[in-house]
Length: 207
Image (cartoon, one colour):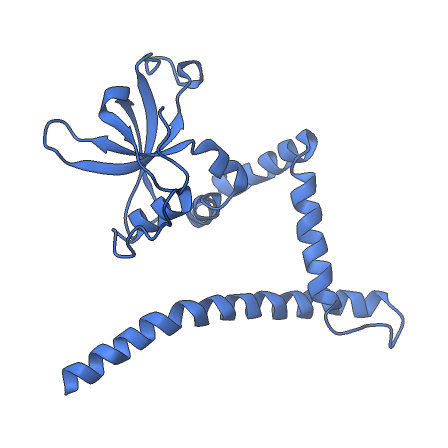
């Protein structure tokens, strides 16, 4: 009986916590935007001109404008120079790099670089690991890695942000019928979530 109750409580937690944490993060972002930006708007606007929610709306506009400006060369260069300051600061550089790598997983630009989900054979052991082809053009690889019959594959690690970039022969790589999101979720959770993709999902095209 105790085991039955404990198992169902654990199942309930696993079901509720992801939803609750997602909603809490969204709520925290909305409240923070309303508190910070809303206070600035109150200071700028005449009295009684402020409406609840203007801080959130302003935050969305600011985020949109930053994303728009990041497509320009000048802003990209300025941001890169400013980012180098974080990379030179002790302690801060480790924290910032970890956060940057985490959010780069979800960047549209980063997703465009992951051309295909593949399975990479490990020698003659019969074992395979899931990875993402990041580079197939030998001219874009460093000197000494420009093997015509090789591709660069990123192998993510489970339950942590990190992985390995390996140069592997094309013969050791085969396409996998998974989207980027499915493969990320599958590898980061060590396969606990399962594939969970509908029939005919994208992927599986020849390299």
